[in-house]
Every structure is written in C-alpha cells, then in structure tokens.
Length: 409
Image 1: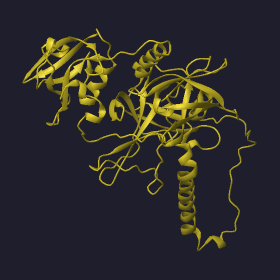
Image 2: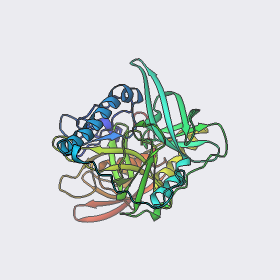
Image 3: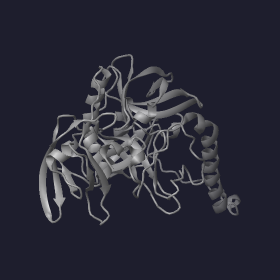
Image 4: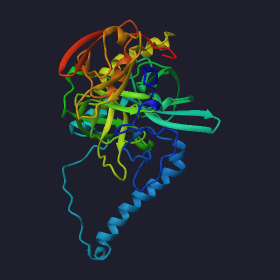
C-alpha cells in the first residue's frame, strides 16, 4: 500500500474505529439514547457532537422528550404510586436568607461559566443538495473582538447559509465561512460587528492529565443559554479516525458532550480554552464506551487557526508527502509499521525500509498508523522531519525532507 492510499476510506479498519455521524444525518431515537449503530464488524463508533436540527426537532426531539420524561415519570410512579397519598406533611426547606435570582452562582464552575458564556455562540447552518435541504446546529467561540469565530468544520460543512446567535441575544446574525479544514475539523466563521468577547486559550504546555475541565455549548439545541458540564482531562494526545482522515493531538475527557456541543470550548477552571469539543465515543452490543469525549487540543487549534487565516487570504494549503504505506503493529507494541516504501520518495531517500517501526516523529510519539498519517499530513512540503525508527533490535534516527502531496501522490 502506498502513501496515496492514505485516505481514510482506504485505511484498513482496526479496533476501535471512530466513525462520526454526519451532522445532517438523522440521529436514531432512543433507546438507547443516541445509540449509533457501528459497522458490520461491531466496532465502537464515535458521534460527531453536532446535530441535525431538522431531524432533531421532527423526530429525535419527540423521542428524546418522550423517552426522558417517560423515564422520569415512570420512576416516580414506581417509587411513590402506592404511598403518595399518605405524604401530606410539608417539606422542610433550609432558609439562607433572600436569594438574588439574577446573581451568579458561587461555585467555581458557575463563575467560570458566567465568564466564558459571552464568548460562546450557537451556529446554525443550512445546506442544499440533490437529496434536499439539511440543517445543522453546533457551537462556536469568538477568537477576536471583530467577529472571527472558531467552530468544527463538520458544523458548517457544505453550508449555503450560516446564522449565529450570541449569548443573551434573541435574534441571529448572518455568518460567513472564511475557511475550513475538514482534516483537522476546524473552521473559521465571521460575523459583522465589534466589541465581541474573545475567548482566552490555555498554554498547551500547562494542560495536565487529571485537570478539572468544563464543557460549554448548545447541547441538543435546547432552548435558552448554553449547557455546562464538568469532568476531567482523561488522557492527552489521543488519535481517532474519521471519514475525513485522522484527528490527532486530541484531549480525551469524561465531561458530558452531546450533539450540539461541536465547536464549543472545553475550558479549565481559569476560564481558559484547553480544547474544542468535536466527537464522543459510543458503545455497541459488543463494546462498552462511557464518558469518552474528544476535543481538539489548544496546541492543534493554535497551529490550524493560523493556516485557516492564510487560507482565508487566498493561500492554498499544501500537505507534506513522505511516500510510505503503513500498517499498525500486531504484537501489542506502540508505533506504526512501514508496509512499503515508494521508490524515489523522501522516505526512500532517507533510508526508511519496509518493516521499520516508526516510534516518533520530531520527538512526538507515534501511537499508531493514524497518528503518523495526521502528523505527515499537517507537515509542509520542504519541511525536514526527524524519525525515530525501530529496525530489528536497533533504534535508529533518520531525517526526511518532505515533498508536496499531489492528487495522485
């Protein structure tokens, strides 16, 4: 297999597979809630955290409301049906004095949410295809005070109309897609105006495993302001494979992320953005997946945003080309195995051989084939990369100067 076969549809499937659901595809109704059937092989899947507004309102919302309310009412009747008539005593309620209903909660989470919410917007996009019109709803955050907004690429994919509604506003504003990178699942949207509140990003080096984090976004496109959920950073530098390629450098979190959260921020308790929520893992009949969400890390965001701005200014994005075919290791080890080397390619010139195991590129560990694909894809032509290889029992280092990937290369 040569490198021109690296497109995701040609990558051999390996467990687990994260197969995001298109944002305009109807979400199946419960039960189980938002269960997304996997491929015939029964692998775990991932659901993009955006939502088809049309199908949600007409189908899924009705099922969701019926399922949720039914479940709650059912539990209440089960617990209290036979004895509820005997409960006539008043409830005991603690009195802490008068409560200002307009005040901000006193918890750290409430304070962070109040500080970040003005930077968070809901994004509705409309598309038109041969199959008919489709609508998608996701979340975005302000990057600048002049109306530049960051969201997921899949939220605005194929959009012919963009509407952006700000926190505490009732009327949407017209938005425009400036640039989009499907491979990294990020896009820039612009609205007219000034004095918007831009989000602040965390130093990528300061993000640690176990850090407490908060997700803010328009989950399920529910009425009112954004939803706020909390959890921790469960893992760093994750890689998942989507229909548009591999997403690497991801933050894994157990924070509740739902359809509609796509493009919204994952923030620390300082109110700094540590990632952009993009996908969530779903289990199936043979695989359990609970509280596993993914966010594009700040490190990736800072890099891709600059590329998107260049794209918006007319610069064509070029990708690096190494010239190898890859497979995953089957011995339980970490790394990507070189399946073949294209004659005359940068890899061949660097001395890379079939059977080599790539352990790291530019000191970034390679956890598998998908991660290596993403790193090479994001590198630029003429860039020299340093590869740490395992060849038999020997560890060697080689350098390869990438060329430009072409339509056939």
